Length: 191
Length: 205
Picture 1 (cartoon, each protein chain N blue to C red):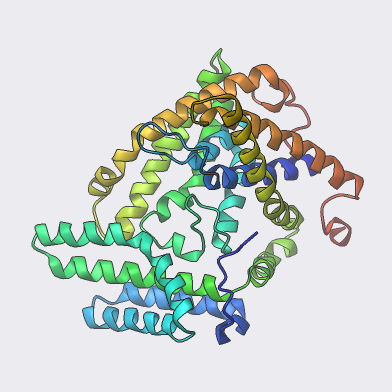
Picture 2: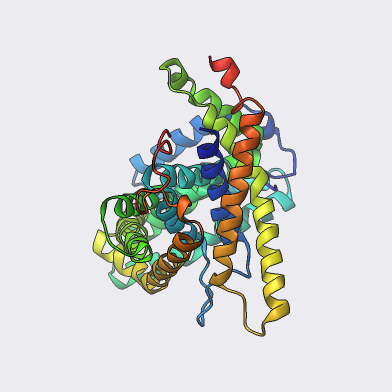
């Protein structure tokens, strides 16, 4: 119980840190913030329920007025802005990523996490993000999707990085990945 | 941890958070129920007047919060001008900016403690149903406490990287940062257990 709360809270803090530290940008010409990388990681490392809890906690603190979103944004305005779908979709994205890594059996932990991140952090997140944009701006879903599609290459990169990080994590700390080869699974699912 | 609450004390700082949030919901719903351009214009001007009332510094901070809407407003106006439906574009833009302005206003005039207390009260029905909310009440201060810790750690990692490499630090720092978060979580978990469990567990049982 205590350990689950601590992990969820620390991952929420890490997602915030990833968006706030300018040095950790994924620069390839244009700097891309690492915040959504944190969302993918939360789902891939903590699993569906705890991952969604960590990201949900992070979004709750943003709603309470802490400037934790990339670029120091926060507050209730985030949830009526055109990017509201993405902010509200973050916990769902983490859940979907976690569900993928827990259900889909692939030999390589990194591959599982990377594909999970594509499913949760891109397919699910962009559906919700485009839906939010369509609602706020009164466009059709297709038009909204066309507007956000430019960010997909950057997020594909983040999914690949998620895969690499989880692969490394499965080597140095296999016990942290509850879904990986069934280790550390027992007694770890109370939350 | 700095919050987005304005340091300039306004009268609204003392109003109950629940009322402000309720008013925000009503105003937002109201704007969606009408398609009148005049009503939306008046609403935006009213919101701006509320920003201007506490003084220039408050107004400037408020307008900074609205900057995120600018690119979207530009795209919307151009889009609708191109499709020949400028009125709808102006309406949607006005509504969007007003909604963000009002929501930010609540954030700027409500302290973090008030909002955390509001969350506690809003989750009261869950407690009555027997669903414990103390994990949430324990986790919120933990995140607030550990975000600066992890930010500082990430900056230390970036410095260490720069001392050894001519290349920019980048995503490679995320792995040591994740390990640090996991290790800290283990220690915090043990510390919580050693102190008798999460906050409130004694009152709950």
